[in-house]
View 1 (cartoon, rainbow, N blue to C red):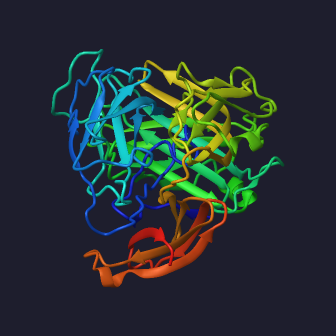
View 2 (cartoon, rainbow, N blue to C red):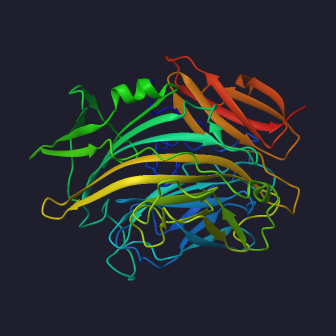
Length: 459
């Protein structure tokens, strides 16, 4: 069992809330595929600017690039950080594919800090450079926004404890445990309210042992702990049922909150796609209905989350468009997906207990989750970009996926030189992508955490 810690891969480490398990708060590291080392496009401007406050909940977020972009391989993702939620927008390209406008759909939540992340490349395969991420805070309604400030207002501090099991489905048969990462996961987090700061955070386990929570350097209002194991018994013995006592240490006052993860909160089984074969040849010009077998033991009080490559998502826990545990399908609207593309996707089942304490201004969430990952493939254009995605670090092993066209010859390289000297690129792997997705696992030296990866067409 190992604890995830920040790593430096490609540009900078990112701790976000919508990664492997979508609505499950998770540590996610975003990798941008580097196909060439020069002439990379950049973000010229963003509206609103990073750090702006009072931003309209309905106004488009506009990104202007230094050159025309590959619209099939460039996308923006938006998250609210309190509460955790992946937000949906409608993207529109203009000005010769140099301007991307993302209109909230539905409107962003009011008085909420929003994080955006961009990934993409130009038509020549040159990846977006710089630091393609930023934050802003929405206002109380749909009025305009200005600058200054950091976070939203009138937010409650959130305390979260959860366990998950991750599966893969690669055929019409039953899913199997994920073999790319340890499939048994434990997660704990504190998400501070806008008017609160903290110096440190700890969590006492049911066994009375104490773990430190690590402050997110990019989103300092978060304190996190993420643990993965290949042995369920080992994880359960350490992070089993019972009370988890969070303790926040602040300059002026401290706070202690208990979250109970009860034995009665059953572990959901693996979601099973009922129309897996259909997901392998989706016509993006038509609406597509994704279906799955019933959530065993799922009720209207439970929760199902669907994420199709972060392009299409259902609502997270507590939101109006969240799927209940009785749902067995969801429709992806026509023209949501790009032709000739592969989407790393998932369906997750949750048993969860969400409690709001208005008097003390905090919320608690305890959950158990079963999540099945799969690859959704669309028909149409045959040009598929090479993209590095789904990065994780466990111990001294960096892991990520390379998506490409089926049968694509790939050359995957790494560089430990921060100066990015072209002579320092070394070959990690030369392979043929039989399925369109290649899993890469790279053991790295603990004394040299800086590693840059790139992928390009093989020789």
